[in-house]
Length: 104
Image 1: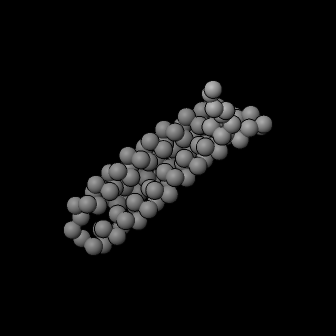
Image 2 (image 1 turned 135 degrees about the vertical axis):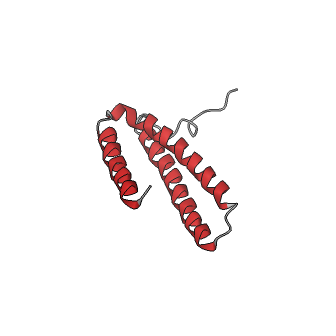
Image 3 (image 1 turned 90 degrees about the horizontal axis):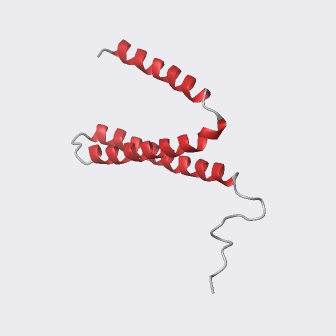
């Protein structure tokens, strides 16, 4: 594909992605974040696998940047998901794991 066709696909993907995400109801955002975290994890593993077989230094640097960005995306996704799930916890307790009493 030539550059114009790739740019066209990229712009259309941005438009379609924005339209799809903006139409999602708020009750589905947490499951969607979990799904996108799984996809980010797959991208991260794939990037590491490709970087392991690279012979060019310039391409390796680009892959290293991609690994860093994918890691930031993955960790950020888990932080956002945790905060969103925290909204559903009762206000009297911070975390159900912290407030469990030992069974006698």
